Image (tube, rainbow, N blue to C red; front, side, top):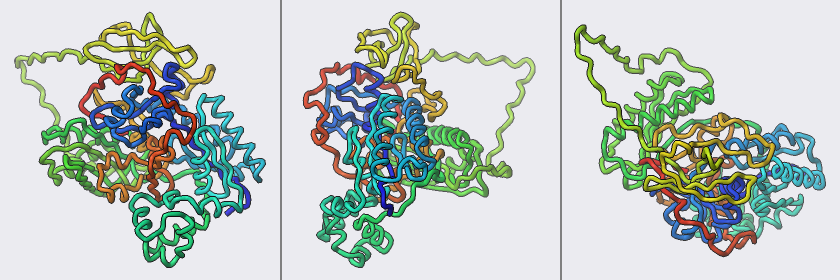
Amino acid sequence: MRNAPTILHLDMDAFFASVEQASKPSLRGKAVVVGGLGPRGVVATASYEARAFGVHSAMPMAQARRLAPNAAYLVPRSRLYWAISEQVMALLRELSPLVEPLSLDEAFVDLEAGGAAWDEESARRAGEKLRADIRAVTGLTGSVGLAASKMLAKIASEQAKPDGLRLIEPGTERALLGPMPVRILPGVGPATGDHLRRAGISTVQELAEAGEDELVRLLGKAHGHALYAMALARDERPVVAEREAKSVSVEDTYDVDIHDRLRVGLEVQRLADRCVRRLRGAGLSGRTIVLKVRRYDFSTLTRSETLRGPTDDPAVVREAAARLLDSVDTTGGVRLLGVGVSGLADYTQEDLFAQAMPVPVPEEPEQGAVEAVVERPEPAERQWHAGQDVRHAEYGHGWVQGSGLGRVTVRFETPQSPPGRVRTCFVGDPALEAAEPLPLVPGSAHPPARLGPPNSDRPGASPQTPEEARDQGGTRGRGDARHREEAEDRGEPQDRAEAEDRGDSQDRAEAGDREEGRVREEPEESGEARGQVSSEPASLPKSWSGTVGGAATSRP
C-alpha cells in the first residue's frame, strides 16, 4: 500500500435522479424515482428525498409507488446520462492518465500517476478542485474518497455522501475498518455475510481476529486469503485504465408473460439483431452465442453455442440463438429473454457463411399475374413516456409528466427557467414533437447523442435502461460482467437481484459492474442519515407517472 492517499474514488450522487432534477426545475427538492414504469419495472435510482420514504434502488416499482405515491416516476434517459458521464470522465482524465471507470457515475483515479497529488494536502486540493469542476461543468454533485488503496477510497466516498469529501489518513485504516460490518468489504455479499455471521463474525475486527486459517476453512482458500488481507486494510490492486470487454448482451423483461412460442422466437430474433448492432458499434465480434430465458416461475435457463470463429453476422447470431431456443421448454410462459455474445475479438471470421441458412431469392411474378392489394395499416398512436423531452411549436421546450386517454400532460420549462406551467395536449397534436435534452449548464453543450447507446429499437419498448447501458459500457472498458452467484443463492427474482448493489449508495444500481470479482449488496441507506432530505411528501400530481406504451420494458 502507498504512504499517501493518492487514490481517488468518485461517485456521483444519485446520478440519474440528480440529472432529472437538474434538468427539471419543478422537481428540485422533490422525490424523484427513475426506472421501468411497467408492472414489473424496477427502481434504478431514487433521489435522497425519495429515500426518506424508504424507496431504494432494485426495489419493485409497484412497491416504490406505495411508499411514495406523490413522487415523480420517470423513465431513464440513457443518452443524456451517457453524455454527462463523458463530461465527468473527461475531467477525471485531466487529473491522471490512469482512470478506471466502474460505471457511468463511478471511477477510480490514480492521482500520483498524473502528478496531481503526492501527499495528503495535495490530494485534498485535487479532490476539492474536481468536485468544483464537476459542479461547474455539469451542475451536479459528486462525492470523493481519498485513500492509499482502492478499497479504502471507495469506503471513504460512501462515507462522504452526499456531496462531500473524505480523506483516510495512512496509518488510521485498521482503526477505521475495525468496527465496520464485514459487508463493507469487497466480495462480501448477503450469502457470505450470513455464513460469517453464523460463525460469530460480524465486524471487520472479528474477521481479522479469526485468523487466516479459520477464514480459509470457512470460505475456501482464495476467498479466505483475500478477505483476511482486506480485514488488515491491505489492498494492492492498481488502478487499471482499460478493462477488456468480456461480453455484449441485451435482454428484456416483459410486463406480461409470453406464452406463444412463435412470439418467443420473434423476440429472440429481435434481441439477436440488437445485440449484433451493439457488437458492431463497439467494433467487436464474438465466438460464443448465449441465450438466457427466465420462465414464469423465476427459474432461469442459460444455453450457449460456440462457433468455429468470431462473427458479427446477424444471420449467424439469429440462427444460433434460434437453435438454442429449441432446447428450452417455454411451457408456462416466459418473463425475460436475453441474447449475448462472448469470446470477443476485434476481427471477424469470414468463413462462417455455412452456419447461416441461405436466404431464398423471391421468384419473379409471372406475366399477367394479378398484383395483390396490400392494405396499409393505420399509423400507430404516438407514445409519450414520463420524463421524455418534447417541444411544442407555441409553448417551447418541456417534458412529459404523463399520458393516457388520448392526452399527454406536459410541463414546459428548461434547466435554466423557473418551474414552468403544465398544459394538456392531444396525443396526436402535430405541434408537439420529441426533442433532444437541453444542456444542464448554460453554455455547456452535451456531447452528441451518438456517444450513448441507442434506445430500444422495438416500437413501444421503454427507453434504454441502465442495465443496457452497462452492457454497452462493457464494450468501452466500463466494467466486467456482474457476478450473479450470490443473487442466485438468495433465491429471489434475479431481474431484481441483479440490479441490486450497495444500499449505502443506492444510485449504484444504475451502474452495472463494480470492482473485479465482487458483489456488494447491503441494506439500503436511511434517508435521514444524510441530513439533506425532506421528511414531507412532495406535493406533485399523481398523473405524471402516466402510462407507458408497449408490452415490454427493458430491465433497469
